[in-house]
Image 1: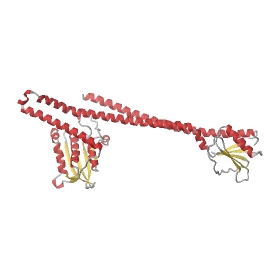
Image 2: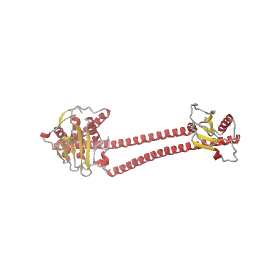
Image 3: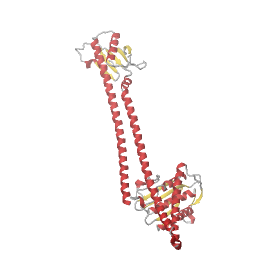
Image 4: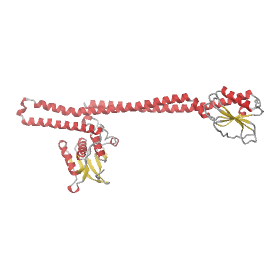
Length: 437
C-alpha cells in the first residue's frame, strides 16, 4: 500500500506541477499578446501620422497644380513645402494670388485627399512680425469647436502660406477607433481568460487540498474503526466471559479508540466553529507551570507509548502567571506536544516558559526530524502537512497547527519557529503580558 500511495503522490505531484506550468505559460502568453497588441497600436498610430502628413503634402502639391503660385519646373517639391513642427506646414508663394482663392483651393484639396479635420491658413511676408489674414477652414467632418489660437511664427526670407492643424492628434486617434475598440475587446477577453485561469487553478488547488483531507480523514478513522471491529468480534465470543484479562484488554482497546475518535471529531468541530466566527476568548489568570503540566498529563498515554521524555524546567519560584483563555491555550500546547511526539523517533521534549521583550513565551522544543525552511511559511495553513514520503507514517488532518495559530491570534500573540532538519524543532508562542491586550 505504501508503494502504491507513493506512486499516486508522484502522479498527483506531476499533474499539479504540469498544471502550474500550464497556468504560468498561459499567463506569459496573455502578457505577450497584450504587449504585441500595444506594439501594433503604436505602429498603427505612427502609420496614421505618416498618412496624414503624406495626404497634406499631396494636397499642397495639388494646390500648386491648380494655381501657379511658383514655377514648379524650376524648384523641387521638397524645396516648396516645409514641416517645421508636427501641426504646421509651410508652402512657398512667389506669385501674387487672391488669398480667398488659395483658401478655397486648399479646402477642396484637403477634402479630395481625405484630410477631414479643420485647419487654419495664414500668410507670411518677409519683414512682418505676424501672419496676414488667418482664416479658419472647416470640413464637413469637423467635430471640434473653433477656439482662439496663437500661431507660432516661422520667419523666412520669402513669402509662404501656413497650414495649421490644431486637432491633428485627436483626428488621427479617431481614425484608429476600430483598433482601439478591437484592442479593448481583446484586452477584456484576455483579462477574463486570466481570471478564469486563476479561479481554475485555485479550484484545482482547493480540490487537491480537499482530496488530501479526505485521504487523511479516511485513514485517521479507518484504523480505529478496524481495531474496534476486531475487538467487538472478540468481545462477542462465548468464551470471553471466562477470560477476564482478555475481556479487560479488548474493552480497554475499544474505550481508547472511542476516546481517540471523539477527540478527532471534537477537533474538527472546533475548526468548523473557528471558521464561522472569532474564537470566544475568556481571559483569566493562568499559572503557566500548572497549565503545561495539565497539557502533558493529557498526553501521557501517547508519551508512554512512545517512551518519550518530557522536561518542564519551571520551578515554583519562577512560575509565571498570564491572563489567557486556559482551555484554548492548553489545547494549543497539547497540539504542539502531539506534533513533537509524532515526528520524533525517541522523543525528548522540553516545555518551558519565560519573559521575552516585554512579552511572555511558551516554548515546545523537540529532537524530531525538523522542518525545512521552504515548508515553514505554510505550516499554519489549513490541511497543510509537510511531505514525509508516506502519508501513513504520520496521522492527522493538517489542522492542528492551523488551530494553534487561531488561538494565538485570538490572544493577539505570535508564533516563532526555529527548526533544523535532523536536529529538531522549537515552536515559541509569544503572548502579551498585559491584561487588556
